[in-house]
Amino acid sequence: MEWMKAVQQLRAGRRPGVLVTVMSVRGHAPREAGAKMVVAADNVWSTVGGGNLESVAVERCRAMIADGVAEPEVLEFALSDKAPYQHGVQCCGGEVKLLLEPLPVVPSVAIFGVGHVGLELARILARHDIELHLVDSRPDQLTASRLAVLDDAVAQVHVHQVPLLPELVVGELPPGTHALVMTHDHAEDAALCDAAIRNEQLATIGLIGSQAKWARFRRKLAEDGNSSKAIDRITTPIGLPDLPGKEPAVIAVSVAAWLLQQFSAERHPASARSAERRPTPAQREAKA
Image (cartoon, rainbow, N blue to C red; front, side, top):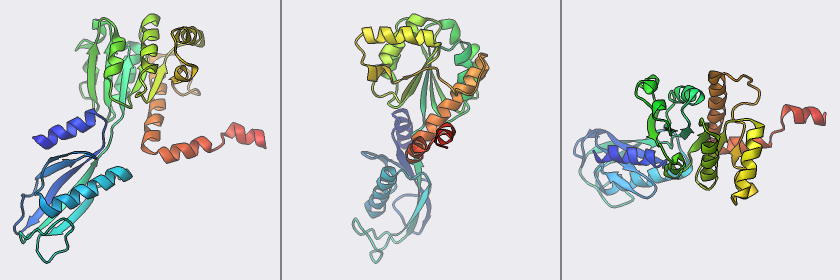
């Protein structure tokens, strides 16, 4: 169905939209109950009947997208030449209710390196409605039996087995993806970091490792022509600083919690900016 493909297309491209459904019909109407249409800021797929009711619905959908409305809405139309209209008369004689359901932009995460930590992190993130990309250069890390723990995932899981140059996957990720670099090979990590900071569409870039590792990486990235501003896009170490522990499951929980904070900031940017301006307990104590 066209509308289903449109929903998938918007989701994959991390673009917002609204799903319009004919909830109910009384009397005569252009489409029956259950008919659907998808509206994006620059496109419309399928139809709920055309004419005034569809034009008004499209107009409202685009206002919802622009305003970031997250709650569904219902529009009611009387298809009569005596009823108020904005885009031409529609006189079928019936009454129609339309349900407008926002299609949110779901988070996108790419885990480069599906080793002990990467798999534990994937298990946690797979319980959330996200696009989850798993990338590894080692075939044995991405076998069906090893990834069977993700069979009941809520997330849409995309597996990228790339024996050579896994950094090429960086350029294929959807805009706004959170990239996490945690492979088995420091040279591979370095190449991925270089590719990631050259991709300006990534939301965040996280690197697992020690301060000594980061000092070497920072120096190498600078030698390769990357600016300090670009290099500073990389967050390391990743995770919650107050959650200690080196076990893979502990690190995974810490990184997942950090990512959930990033997701929340994307959904509520105003609240995130307010939190950034709010003094920390240490800052309040220092002032006192």
